[in-house]
Image (cartoon, rainbow, N blue to C red; front, side, top):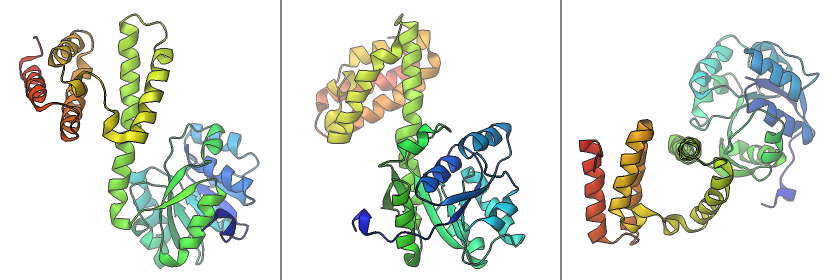
Length: 303
C-alpha cells in the first residue's frame, strides 16, 4: 500500500514509560506527525535530563500516571525489564481497555504484552532497526528507518500507519522469529561498533594520527559493497588464503593487543568458511589457512 493511502490514526495523547535513548525520540517523531506527548517517566538523572531536553513542557510522572493520561503508551525500557513492567502495570489496574500499548524491544513480539492484552490493551511491537544516541539527531535518522513490526492481524493497519508517521518503513516479523531477527541486528550493528573501536585503537598504537579518518572511507566502501554483494565483497588476506600474513597478524596482536586475538581468530575462521563456500578461497589455500588458525589458537601464535 502506498504510504499516502495508509489510514491515519486519530490524533493521540502519547505517553512514554522509560526515557532512555529510544522513547523520547519516538515521542518527538509522533509529535511531528500531529500527536501530543502528554507524560513521560524516567528514573535516572540522565533520563530526566533527556526528557526535559527533548520533550520540554511534558510532565515527568510515575509510570501508572503515564498510562492514566495517554491513549498510546510507549514502553521503552530494557528488554529484560519489559516482562515485569507489563505484569506490574496489569496487576495494579493501570491499563485502560482500548489503550494502545507499544513496546520497542527487538527481542519480543506481542506475547510479552499478554497481561496487558487481558486487561483490554491493544498490543503492538514496533522495533526501530536503528542505533540511538539519545539526542535530537535520532529523530532525523528515523526517516527511512526499518521497523520490525509484530501485531495482531486486526491492528496491522494501525501499526503500519504509526511507523510511517514516524518516518519509518514497516517490516513484518513473525512472533516466533523475533529472537532471531534481534540476534541478526545485534550481530551486525553492535559487534560492528566493537570491531571499529578495536581497529581504531590498534591504528593509534601503530602511530596513525587520525584513525577515524583512515577508517572512514575504507569502512564506508566495505559496508556499501557488503550490502550490495554479500559474500562476494570479501577481500583481504583471509579471503585470499594468505596464511603467512594471517599468522603475522595474530603474532602482532598477541604482543600489542592480546584482548583482540580471540575475536580476530573467530572472525577469521568464519570469514574463511564463507569465502570457501562461495568459491572465493581456493581449497588448497584454505587448508593451510585453517591450519594456521588452529595452530595459533593452540600454541599462542608464536609462528
